[in-house]
Image (cartoon, rainbow, N blue to C red; front, side):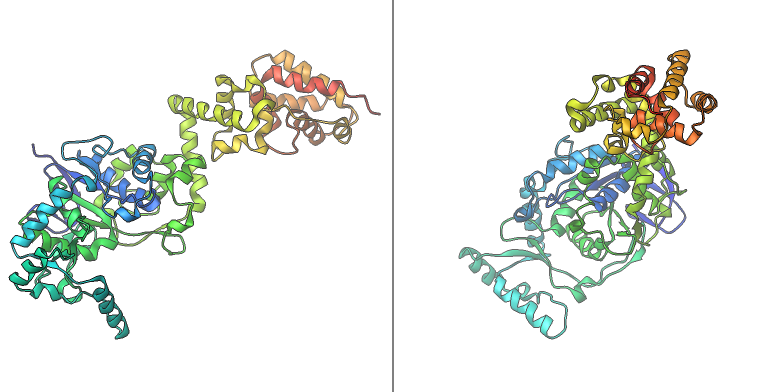
Length: 518
């Protein structure tokens, strides 16, 4: 089955070289995100996964999650499971993965060792690779000598010149060894989806790279091309830091007589000041954002808004809109500067979308119910956990809050816990508090359940005219105190609509119990 989707970019589709213009994605589109579970998923990784996911969905393809866990000494317990959890939470779930399975598994590199060994043996037999017996001490000396002379450390390819009988003798003796790939000059230029024509004579600046380590595990250079080949990956979209290694990988594809995928190297995601995102920052991990109440849609939105690859740039875009707007030819080589200070605004807009969507709002309600119980405990009124009440609060506060966590903070505690108000606080505002309260109670009784912010705002302005001299500001200050125990917050009318007639009456009745002041 041949699928074709048009996009403008520099690309090589199978054996056909295409320059900038209207080219096509041909055949089954399969892309992959291949992180190492040596740490948890952060924003840089999410962005790479997102572009791969969007590319796959734009062209009717598959998004594969493969975990590169060959560096066994650096594996972090729980990281592998967390990476897949976070992709699903973020709304970019893989079609194939260690958890979901698929037709070309397993999707953990540590479970594919025999495949790498077979490929390494194939390279040995074809003379494109060789056994290296150099000790770590010798390699350390090479590095130190290079640095001392101001050169870039590189392996001197000593073992590629060993005779066959020397190699066999060492193997028979059980000498520790690695397998190195034999770099050759004459690397052909390739067309990168994003960076255009690229060429790097790797043999002139690097020593022969290790492809199989002494512990029997492959290095990235071997494992990634083997997996991309056998998993039928059509396009490799990865960070620009791998661009310089691509020529090396293409030499390996040629040595194995395999067709390479099309490569696209994404520009770096940097802090707004141009510094690199660092895992040591702590707050760039997805789990931190999830814990802080950031919506996944806001993260996807902000990481794409600061970059390129879309026909339009905006705020408030959801994943279906990102897919529709995606245009690979729009991806530039300029680094994307991420300003996390804007994240609350992105989250505010996406939270508003959630509140307005009935199904997503129901999920928000459940989450908020749990937070209320956790924060307020026995102090809260049971009625505040009712779905209708919380939905009313959310609808009235949408557009004003950036996260649900705000609603369980001190500024909104009055929504869940009745405030404590003293007679001294009331007396400090006005001497006719009881008269004003009586007017409000009468108003609420007349209006019944039909309370709206606009109508109440007008009613309260009219009510002030019936006082004996208390000005509008003092009346609002008194009502706000009785309702919330605070001096600022949403409008008094909104507070009243949120709380509802019964709770309003209960809170104002308390003021009638205070002694009158002259």
